[in-house]
Image (tube, rainbow, N blue to C red; front, top):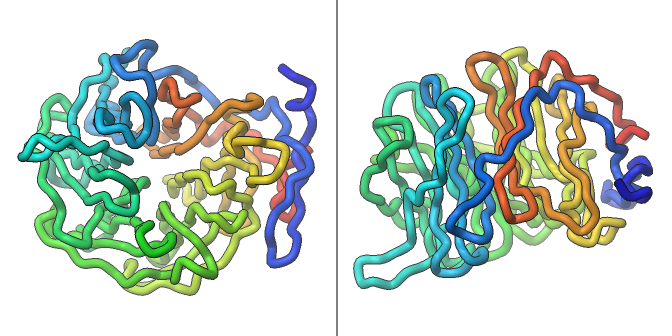
Length: 363
């Protein structure tokens, strides 16, 4: 590994809490990883991105978009299933072909298994993120076969990148965002598995803070926290105390963000597990997605460094998805150089956590 990668990260908060890196996160933080594999080695598409993962009974189901290149009309949603030790070959589960024969690219699938009901596959179809629309398919057999595509109501997109949560009421709360009038976050709710919907107003105006793709964490008393991707050099947060009906003003956290996707999950032991790129644009990383990291927090505010999942100069490791399965293991999928989807399994009890000082990755 190149010498530049062996240096340690040290980014410090500047004016307005913005981060400025002075090096690369140190390598070697791998304790707790019990499996590191590709979901597939070869596929009938050259590029892939934006994976998602769900547990359905004893099966893992993963999905992503694949095609010639992101935004091309041939980009569809591909699915693979893992029963036992092996993943099935990728199968195209959805495409953007319209009734008149027009074909648009597909984007950002999100799998979600509700407590009762079929596996849900949300995705977007359209020429660009500012003009796409939400689509839903379901599977009653763990991702083997899928229903016909159903376009969501006007103004409803479904979860935009990261998984929903199911509230104690049974309603599904979807973290979502729009890009047609600046980067803005809002939340959508369905109490009947997608038959009817309600949406909040945008939480931010897209001007002071440009924010999309929230991920949801659950705190004691049912308080919710959303962590968001931003253009503002930091992961941004907002909080709700009423099951996501209203949200606090958005604020930057101490963690950097390179305008790259993140995902997180609240673990069974109450801790919170976050996967993200611990970099910002304009630092030593031209793509800003050359390292992929995991951090753990007891309260969603104080984060400890947990893992360096990837690190390679001029490469891209991005768009993580995170779940915890019933056996307690944490499963992470992410884009590996836009060529493959990586699957990593972590034992959260075996992590070797290290303190970060004001958000600086430990040396």
